[in-house]
Amino acid sequence: MQALVARLPSTHPQYQKLQRELKKKEEGDFGEQYILNELQKLQPLSDCHIFHNVIIPTILPMQIDILIITPSGIIILEIKNIRGTLHFKNNPRQLIRTTETGEVHTFTHPEIQLQQYMQAMLHFLDTYHITMPVYGAIVFPFNNVDVHGEGSGLPIVMGKELPLYIYKFITQKLDIAMDDILHIILSQLQQKNPFPLCRYYHIEPSVLQRGVYCENCGQFSMQKLKATWFCQKCEHRCKEAHVSALKDFYMLVGDTMTNRECRDFLKIDSPYVTKRLMQRLLLTRSGNGKSTKYNLSLLNGNR
Image (cartoon, rainbow, N blue to C red; front, side, top):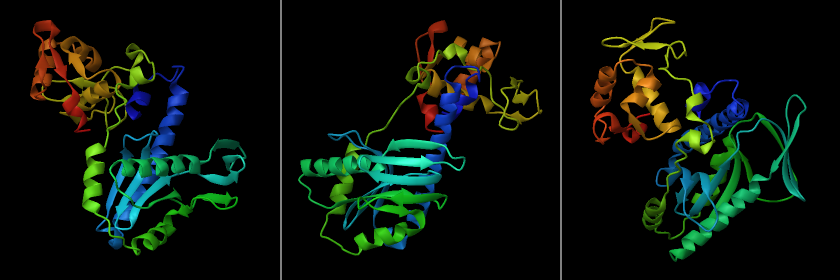
């Protein structure tokens, strides 16, 4: 998403929407990473298993922020990194946020999604003839939110009190074969692959900014010299600057690339220079001559 927003012209009809979506994803990921780091510091969780962004095939669509397998049961955490004043209403179930500037936004109550995840997990375990408790909580990582709730429901927990919430479960140890459950979940984990993003968001790849990004000044101004890349704006040099651009192409446009597509995307004139760059990356190839396509999928694991 960062690559897409960086390469999309600010005049594009979807630019503002994608910029807002990127900010939301970055804030959400920051909150989840904070909670993960805090959980890994807890000594009582040293014999537990913690998963992040879990996708498991179940009767209901399920992508869990944080999943913890403990000797006392499974804990599902729905992380919400939201600022402002929040009112959780029960009838109908809604989340109403008032920002610092007075704007009011209404969202689906996160409890609904969390309950679906808990029911789906119970059904998933039942298909493997496993009976164990499944717990869930809505977690706000930071104290930059003022929470108001109505009545009883699933727990709403602040990041600092999360250890206390978890401790009350792991002290009630049950005779659960954690290794069996771990093996089943690992065997069923699925990867979410939205690439290429241009297809996902119905964006014509031809509108993307071409060129190699300079990590120093943030411009697509790198020029290929004999042994390195040189930024025409800030004079920064980097031998491997093209690798990041090729990863952008993989995520935004497609998983294979011809020599001509590479020249166009990196803004290189010589097909021989392009060929050498691709060959040095040890990418697998298919086809012959001008129709040769280089597979970029191996680059994604190195992002």
